[in-house]
Length: 125
Image (cartoon, rainbow, N blue to C red; front, side, top):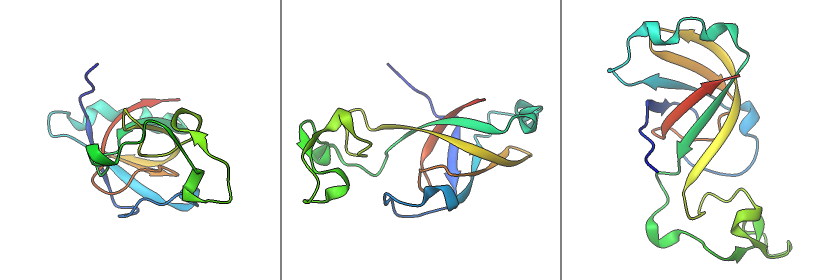
């Protein structure tokens, strides 16, 4: 399976950590291959599904077994596919975030749990 990014996350957080993503605002900038017309009508939607790659996770850090969620030793071990850990084998994430605005080749969003520079693909809801 090949996924070709359509753009990048710009702004928001620069470091991934688990909590309070709903307060984070960022933008998705489409690649130059897309004209601004590609976003016409998107502002009629309230939310956007964003597929992204955990590009900061190195191959050697991928977890294929179980771990304590959020690295908290007080919580029981849980298999990597039963949690939202970024170190999972496919290194893919998906978020449903609120559309705050659309202009040019930029989509402004709230609640996207991806950091600045993350490659993305999207779908509206």
